[in-house]
Length: 142
Image 1 (spheres, rainbow, N blue to C red):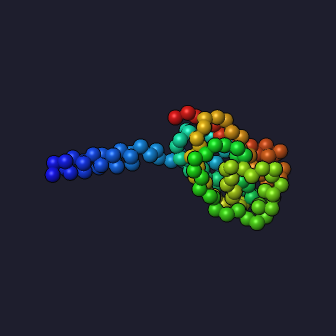
Image 2 (tube, one colour):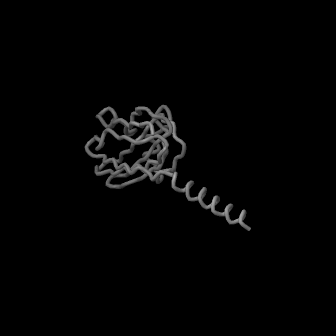
Image 3 (cartoon, rainbow, N blue to C red):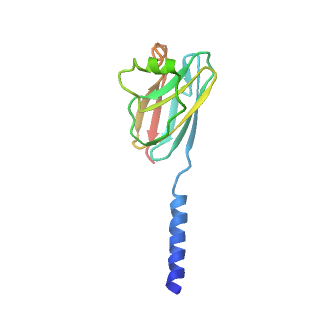
């Protein structure tokens, strides 16, 4: 009986320890307005989930896309409009991260970056990147 009691204590400690090791998501809010992102520089930590919220305060649809970035997990954002999907067809390569928001709307994406580095993000709506709608996502080592 003593062995069973000790086993339960060890199992309980492992379960509690396992739960404690999961980091809380990093909350990042990016506002799109006037062909700019605020902030245009985002810093996150590798291995920690990121809840990225795109707030579109413009009268035009915008998105935030990262063409290439190593990620461990990715939740899909709310579906994009048919018009935006057609515009995305002009992008040479499908972005790894993509969150779009209709005019005056908000959308969210959760991902976990795995490798430190600097990654460009931009709006894939034709002409928006060229008008200056871009920024940098810096993934720092844990």
